[in-house]
Image (cartoon, rainbow over all chains, first blue to last red; front, side, top):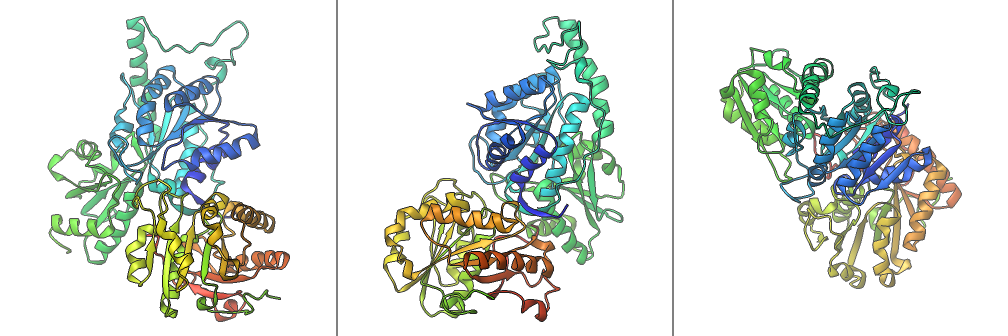
Length: 353
Length: 239
């Protein structure tokens, strides 16, 4: 298919429809309004349903309902809206409801600003809901990757019966880029709907989805099953990352999303000055890639994010050397420049060699 | 046959009417064009220039973000009275001034689609059609303007919402950093058909020379209107 120019938010909605998503429930918030706007226009044309819910809480719970019936359903929002959805996301985890949540981060805390940020890394990877759980979190670094990851997310959601989050900074949603829409996702085995989904019960059986697990031993058993079976399988099969100019690197940036794009320019500039530096870009934030951090040639890791250093502990744990991890970031809706990272690397690593 | 614009087949930016309204489909590249156009006009004209960011649709990539660069061109910048970072559709009273003060050349950068032109309703009584150009920026690689029919439909919806007639097209067909000469020419070919049907000229063709490196003089001759080389004001090097 020929390339088209699309804004990230439009492309995300288009990708979801191409992936077979027929139900979108959401509530408007900048900078992701083009997502519901696109769905509201396009879903009815393919026999789907768009609902502008009365609240974020209502929207995620409608997704719970559609997902419980085995439909491909999605919601999207931005930071404060995702905060409101947390209870529902936890319910989807417990009910093992496949669904996709797109989070288009803006500056916080609170209502904050409408400008881009990455300050919901911990909200996404550590969860704002209650209980023991994880959800897969995919972090695209371009509009093309946003398209591809939305499609993958539905596959992951149905394979493991879990909510999946696509975590973007506001710029990924607002940026216009050429995209190909016909990339096929990796097909994964889908849990047979007749074994669990409402309305798909085989004769003589009634599928149920129960959130209240009043029997404590059973509630524990279910948690053990998640942590012994489901999560290890996701960690083994779904972890993704990109390595950029890492072959002979002695130093490395670690970054994701838009900040990783900015840092790629910094890497190229520092390389031109002779510094052996590269970039590790996690594409899944949970599961967090461990393997690239086994690289013992790296003397220092520089984490770059549009927040106050939320990924730093993950990098420290992965590389095993707390003192080797440095951080530079901007927050509250401010976007760093390649020059800021060039200057930081030179200052901290002792100049270009 | 190419349709002439303001009586001329090829003109300078100084030949356009005093008030230039830059409109177009959502994501067609209006703002990037408007800022480049302003830079060119500032270089070629001795007259005072005002630039108004009347985008009440977008939240990012609005011309007010490059306010300092526009002012450095010696242009009077008029934008939101609330500040660059807000998603509040606020347009200052100052926007009236260049309509009335005819010593100004006036460039208006609208938001996208029919909804972006709604803001003009407030100024309708000050808009003198004899001194106004209403340009429509088109990128044929946007899914909603990728055929002759869709471009004509988009043009009509802009005209219905604004109460103005499009006086010229801007061929801004591009795939950002992947644009080739063939892409620009494909835009030319499609817009030429549109132009023949509605008898509105292609006033300008734009592309970034550093990106479209395979543009030869021969190919350039096939392009309609004045060619305006673009510099990215709105797009950072890493975008």
